[in-house]
Image (cartoon, rainbow, N blue to C red; front, side):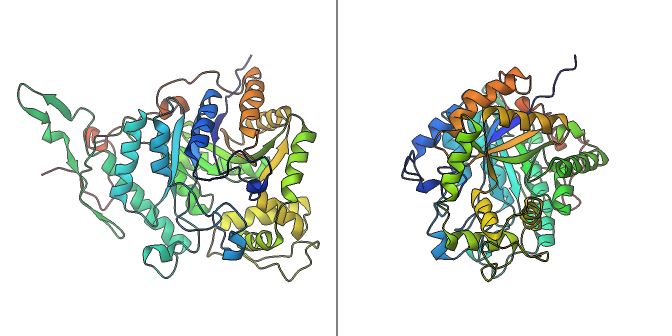
Length: 459
């Protein structure tokens, strides 16, 4: 009998849940979004369930992910205050031992030396469980927080991202694994021949190096990437270990899967070392009726002031002049924002024949859908058997009881079907994902530096 392929599962937390109105529940488990103790207990529950990792999204502006909404609309949500991911993950590393810790940091509004140093530190603190979600940022208000009047174009963001990533990866290789000899007898703490400067001079970055922290335990922290556009796929095929994508249907997910895996092979990579994890948003219930009841109660809480503005931001068009219970009109592609996100929501509206009100409510759910433990296990099994993914990035509509239900009922069902691990397979995130540890480019001489970089011993 052929052994089933086990799913990789990441948990993506959010304050009280991903549904924008989750904070309005009468039985909300906390009243302060900065309650660390609640999040600590939740990640320990996820680790008990053997989730491969916790995946923290982020944005560098006040807003709802990539949505550009007014202060009036924003004030009706709990999405305006959020943890800085690397700081939070460093704290969570101290109260967990196996679960991976992945955080988002943008290449558009950060410096590669700092990013390399932060994630190397997190990897050391956690014993090799760090992951960097590489994003280019699509939030339209981000630029003015960093001294710029306008956001980078889509093409410029990815050109900058490519160079930025190559610099960070090069900095992680500054020290060879055995550079620190710590020889008390000779008085030599490290071997200077095994410390290397990057000396990068490029279009966007000028970074000398070396990095002032030892090579991360994983060699390189796990690289996640969340873009599904043409340049996003190309970047992922070259560099990403995990790919977070939004896919509404199996057939489109399968096309995406085959395309990226094929591009990875063309880039000389083992396609099995590129793990594709579509987002799956869930309202978990003890039964389907229970889950639908919980979801309906949240949908009723969606404020039209907020809902229409968020909808406009995602579909890149103001629909306030159309009948709320009428169909979603034809909307042209807008290259200034996230093309992938816009297409996802418009495709969803067309597929399910949604009215503007219904799409507004679905957008406010941020992609989450109701289901029983068996429903969810059936869906995961269907997608895995179709070869449409390597697992999922799990988001939960409400924190009320969904995480516990997923761990206590969905995961055992998946394990019974041979679709999910019963134990962690290693100590590091790379080991748990079945990914190789990258070789040090300076030590092996087999990896080529970026065209603008020169490999040289540190002086």
